[in-house]
Image 1: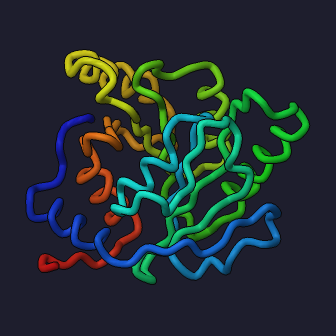
Image 2 (image 1 turned 120 degrees about the vertical axis):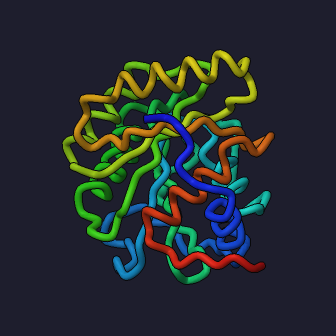
Length: 219
C-alpha cells in the first residue's frame, strides 16, 4: 500500500495546521523527566545523520527549531516540540553512533526503548531511512524493537532528491515489501526530501490523522 491517500483539501488543511506555532518544549535525558502524557505524540527515530532534525524543521517551516549537526550522535536526549498546543513532535536519540562509545550509545538507545514501551499517548513512530542506502541491518534491530514494543510505526525515506525518481519508486516498493509481515508496521511508505519539499504534505497529513488533530481550511 504505497499510493496517495489524501486529496488536495486534506493536504492543504494539514499545511495550515503545521503553519501554526511550534515551539521547543524540553529535552529529557532520563525517563523520569518526561512530560505528562496529556497530548498525543508522534516520534521520529532513525540512524545518526539520517536527517531527523532537517525533516522536523521542514515539516514546520522553521530552519532552526530542531538542531541539526554533522556530528553523529549529537542528539542524546528525547526532545519535545509542541504543535499549537494540540500535539507533540518527539525527536528520539539516533542509533548507530559512529563516534560515541558503545556504553554511551547503549545509554541513549535504552532511553529511546524505555520511551517506546511506556508512553501511552504515543500515536506513531516515524522510522527514517536514508533513501540512498535503504534498510540496513541496524535498521532491522530498530524494527524488531518497535515490533516488540507494539508501537505503530511508519517508514519514511529521507533525502529522496539524492536518487533518481525511478529509484525512489522502486525503493518504496522494496521497503513496503520488506515490512509487510511486521504486525506493528503501517503499510504505506513515504518518500520525502527536506530540501525539495517532496512528500512533506503527505507526512503532515499522516501526522494530523494519527494524532486526530482538528484540521482547518483557512490560514
